[in-house]
Length: 196
Image (cartoon, rainbow, N blue to C red; front, side, top):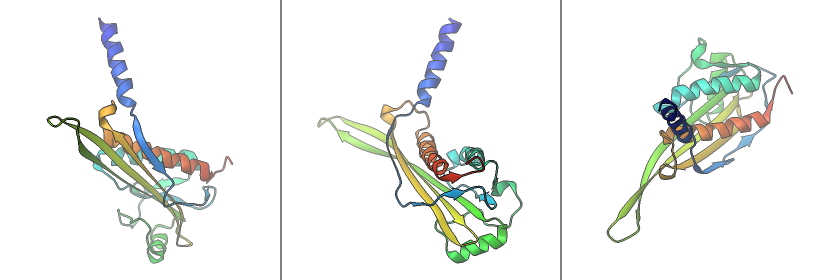
């Protein structure tokens, strides 16, 4: 009996972690220069996004970016800096110059994410309505060369998950991390590191 319950629990955990992403799109609104992690000081800013995923995405981004860069990325929350917690996307050249003076870092990584859930009614008969729930997410990553005052990398990924065909227990959370993973894969492809 115990073996059957354990097997059932493991099967449920496996199935609930497998989300069927209906659609994702990466590569719109892109600036895709190579990111040379061998030079300069790199800073990951505070990640903007839904509370449900913000803390875990921050921890994952710190690990992933340090793995890609060979440990050359610091996190704004771990170092003492005079800077705003929120950094807008596509900041002005003046704002980038202020960030360079205020932080002393050469490059700044800015990640914003948003997620939402939408319900839509499908009319299959005149009497019965079926509601479908779909989770949407978008993750945008920009990298700024603070010395030059310009955006050197921008990538966005949007994803959608139909909750009715998925075993995911937290669909917005799941779809946010799928979109985030696509951007990290893209950064990995464009990164020049000490191992290169």
